[in-house]
Length: 332
Image (tube, rainbow, N blue to C red; front, side, top):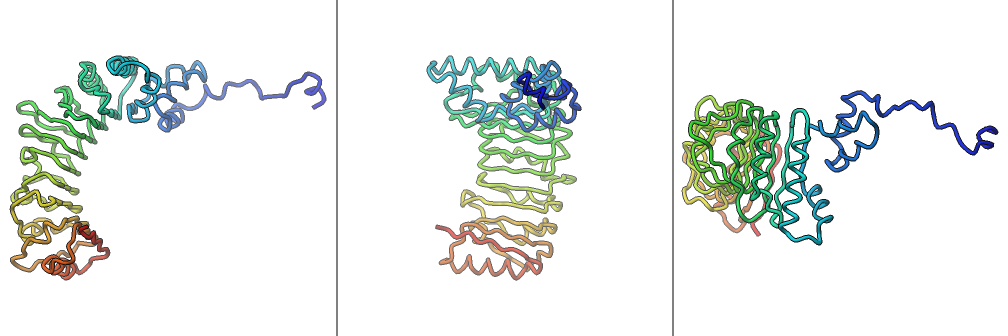
């Protein structure tokens, strides 16, 4: 200690570069918890880390990423902002090495990146790098027409689209690995298949869902199905949905046709969680049914002044002998 005091320094270790010698799987684990911007900064830690961030398999161009870039260009005109940020994203994708397992792109109203040709190349790039999770969140006014390269993402397992247009090519056979799809405000222009492995399908305020008819045929694997405010829904769509366990159907009076609940749930005997809105509390039950497996029931927009709706709430309770939880959301 005395010698340290004389020399004016302290023993800081053996001089071993412990950062460079970290196991590869541990480095990958660390990078998954960093934003893309912070991951790039790790290149300054050591020579070994210099190129590791470009192999990061999760590319999230989310709100945080875009806001940071915009703040640095706040004094520039809008066209320059979009052009420079587009080039940055392109540069990251071009420098990237290895598979891209997850790709998240957020498009702001004041930053319409999807209108630039580079966005087509981004989709082509990830389609060639085995993307598995794809999230395209368009907050702009105009819908984003998904480039045709999207339909070449053969390794895709999870898909989330917001405010987009899906225009599938003729004879498109679907995705062989896709298991989960969430579409919000998406337009489907023609016959579309997400593949035979699809397990979860969530549709909200979508148009053209009749083009998804193949997912309601025999041998489908749907266990989670949610349809919210998507216009008219045909009863025959549910003829072959006997594997569904979690079911949400909320039309918010958009639909004009009345569905008979007994016919609807006869095909879904395995349902254990059910979400319905007040529209279906005006439906009719022609003959008694029993929902043996129903444990969780959520009813929305219930009008307590409507005696008919209250009658159907009580009916649901009676026909669900194993019900464990009931949620009632009153219509304001």
